[in-house]
Length: 618
Image (cartoon, rainbow, N blue to C red):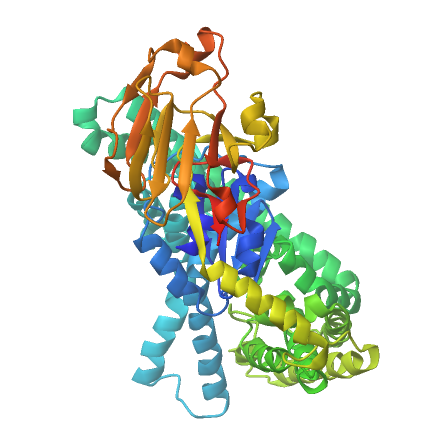
């Protein structure tokens, strides 16, 4: 829950998904996220802002963090909600859509793809007979997700587009229904309108169902507005089916198929122009694409290549880029004298073997800079070698050494591509490893060395302070105003104590801590509270509002009453205060500031009620 709080709370999150190592937030307002706090969190590797997403890199255990986050919030149930956050430019929108749709099932697809590759390898080595029951069952598991891919895409796309997931799945099932698949390559007539079914039908297709679900989201919302509520459970689905099914088969399906063909032809045209250059570019810059979220733009191309041509040349060129990061991280392991960095670099080198590069990139190579450059060069060299050998991939999976069996074609069982990929990847790993030694890097001093003893003392001192600080939560929702900018000199001079001011957006004042009401003006414009830890807090609603004599104020507590953090203290009418000619800016000061080492704010611009906003250091 620390992550959710740091990104601005549940109210600041439009949506969240996770991939292999990171939580991918779509935030309403990124300025409300506390990036510094997340980067200092020991369980967070790095924060990345790219592709219109706020990405919190956790590591290989991200799924557990995601489950806890969803279990303790309503973020996992956003059907029917409206995304009101900033959309960004078209490129960022596209990247966000692709990542949100494909991320949830990449693990399942990767597992199935690896299984499919190993089945091919087992048949090639005569370990399995393709006629055996064991092969048939395992192949059905491995190939099923690819054959009926539109169904899974419909489910995740519906979640992204905030529409009924079951209606979307029903549409996808219609696309891959045996009666439609049997008519692949033919033309039907629907009320006299020609319906063109592609040469391979819609099994394994990508774009048609995404377009269909996007249109469904608008059609469904329209019918929910015009159909009475008590009839919606039956007639909304019926109306959606009657509109979206013909629309998808007559218009969206052919458009999606044509778009897919153009994407595939465009990529393959570039690849055929120079496979070596393509390999060098993809191998050298892949991790840069990943850092900025641009890699999601390539995922549909990989899948379209597999579904349309039966093979893909992009995935093999990316394998050197992944393992090169592991090679650079392993070199850091041998070179560094920092015990903590040694452990991190070794573990991240091992995880790169399984295609997980975030720990290596964000924890080791990128912070040290030169190892990252060495890895990119190694990836470029290995990618160029693989491009030169025209290595192809025949099944989808995460880019890792486990992908290698997928480079064997099922028909010919030719292993030359797999061995070329092994050699190219080994070259990338070796080049990155050696170049890291050549380029060197500025090593971080080992903890406990002479050069860090003074820092260790300061760190210990800071940790002691942190252990004895008291956190106050905001009693108001509004905009932070520095105390020195308050129009009353008594407050702005700090004469009453250190603190901060808030220009409230909502006329409700809550208790910032557990404690006792020690000061309560009959007019309700000011409240004093002493926390259970002895912090004396004065909250003064507006300037000179005592002159209103309680008009517009409603008090909910009594003198000497015990209150809990978050209890409602006073309601006040912001408009009435302003109409009376008074400023509504509200100072919150610690009147016994002299008893403490310091009173620190959280460097916020906006604050929500109940959000941490002042730290009192003993």
